Length: 115
Length: 112
Image (cartoon, rainbow over all chains, first blue to last red; front, side, top):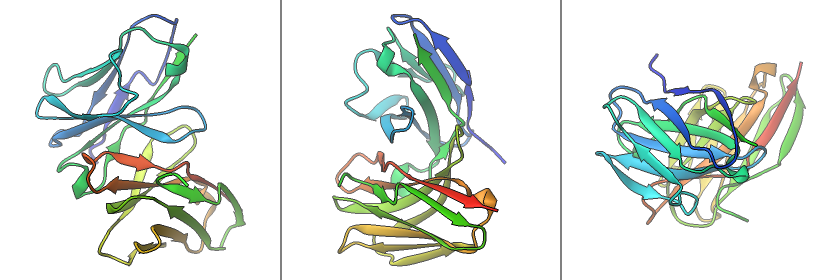
């Protein structure tokens, strides 16, 4: 069964460092998302991406964050200068028709620890 | 309560019992979805119910939606130890760009 894959599964970084989290969405999906979940808290929407551009972003997704689809298969989330409060699980998701149509397919997540 | 707020926060039952989790939301929605998350893992979609539907079944799952009360419930019948997980409702609010708003979740523990 096709699945969304994410790497790395866990990354530890120092505050102020740049981090890139990678995702390979399901191949025929057209809409891509990043969500994050701080330990013990809600899953929060960060950004949605369609047709090679951001279609929506939340207040969390400030100038320190960026997304890219560099090669038609990978979908990356970059945090330019990490802060302690960026420590969280980051989930990539994809869907064929956009969220209004139905379910999102989530990856297993990348745990980011900022020291 | 916030958009997509579940209760109870935690639920502990014996195997074979039914588990009911509730979700309330604030704004009008296109649809409401339930997801499951095993500890430290990704989210798995369980079921979607549209705003014009009142009840939906999938295997041992039954979801109801009351748009007048802005609430939904997820019933898991004949629970199994493998159902132990956190369960989240997520809404796709009308007028939004379509991002999902998740609740804090209900942590279900099913004891064998």
